[in-house]
Length: 192
Image (cartoon, rainbow, N blue to C red; front, top):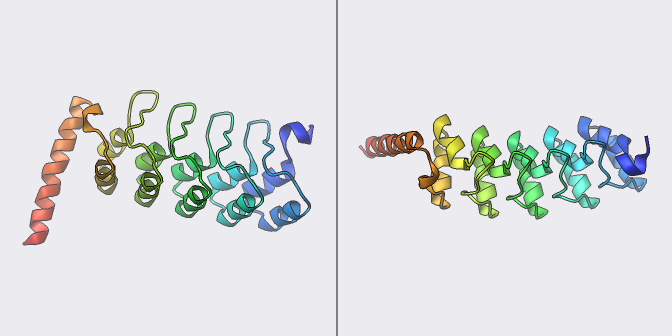
């Protein structure tokens, strides 16, 4: 296999497996960090997907391109958000990752985090400019995924950042209305 075409498999493999000592040695030896494997995965994408924060940090410092996509158009940020890795999401956003990039299903990091129930990640993405009204391939927004799953804190954040409830189906609008009524009852009970 040609390493210039398909990437440095040693760096990619070590990053995917969390082998930080090997990653450090390869980076010190000048290994290129942005060459993907045959599936388009870079070392940063795989380290982010698997939750290896220290390796993500090393790769970013070595010049890894933060918004590179694999063959499914998934970025490191989409995968870290999907898997609930808050610290990695923070690193990627600090490195100016674009929170509105879509994968091949048109899911964004915000949609993935909302579906997964990762409140802190949702908040970080919204603060970084993620669009709460971005629709995926079936015209669902992050709110469409959070609402039926009962992710109340995420629903509140999405509404606070301007999520449009008119994109919800009639059934989901009814769930939203029920959610609002129940939320008011809870707040009223807490005041007593």
